[in-house]
Image (cartoon, rainbow, N blue to C red; front, side, top):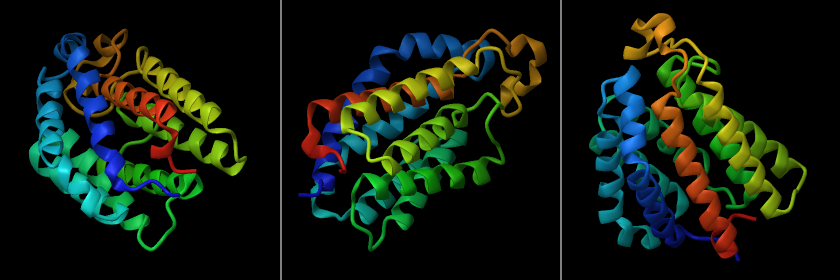
Length: 216
């Protein structure tokens, strides 16, 4: 049986919890090289999704992902809202009329990440959330193509996200306020990459504990 969007509330709650647990640390990162409001903005969007959770089981995947994207675009605002909104809206379009399994999700996620690259005019190595999303998308597609066991897939994407965020530590920033800091941005993790990594890890943990919520 394929998973339905009814599994989304558990994932959203896990995301809300991990961002709250790490809010102080991520805000410190953002205050060092950004505007200091990344977590507050992100939580505004997550809280909006929590309030909508009961609606997801009445939607198909395309509509649910589209709804998430529109909500984040509106509630988060700023660069993060635009980028995450673009990610989910593109995924919603890509999944239409397709069976929801791991192979499809890997392809759909990769298309969403490509849309983020185009929207943000950014790529790997520029100290942004893409330094997490791109390696995760690549790893997910590789593992799905090889029909790897679910625990292995989840472990590898979690590790890819961790390596991705750590790679931002010694990068110069090419986007946002941090780009004006030059060499002073080195030595700091990118806050957007960090929250992306935290959310991916939280999702992977839920899916590992509840395989019925996972596309197979």
